[in-house]
Image (cartoon, rainbow, N blue to C red; front, top):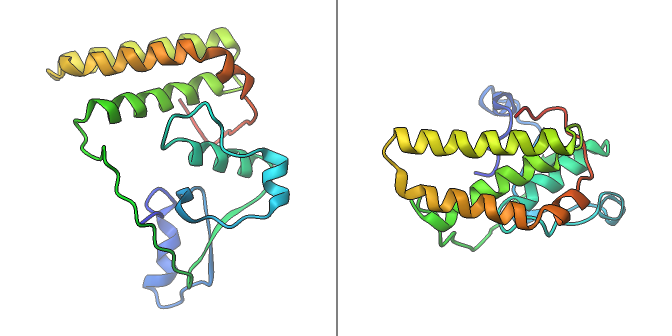
Length: 171
């Protein structure tokens, strides 16, 4: 279930009858991670800039950028007894959180100057606004601009947490 964001070729060995004991992946949700203390000490823990559901992606990027691999042991099992209370796609709180995390990722990019990051962030906000208006989802604009305001309010903390470079991402 948590491997859906990874490369599709990881499943090919399984379906061809030669399953691997470990798989390298780009991302896996932090519901069940095991990693050496040394790695956490080197890259730092979860970034408090993220409100919810973005911190595992950020930490995975920093782990990979530090030269470590992320993998799955295929014969292990983990159970995460949790339900996402804001799982509905039209939930304004979930929308605000998702947009906030997306904008934080843009602003945190150390490859961009601060001015470039903020220009790209503004472009993304206005792009979201235009697409929502064009699709008749004007009611979602409140969540969009609340997320932008939240990023502006947290800008010093966000800039202080610009710790990694991930050339795989493209915004």
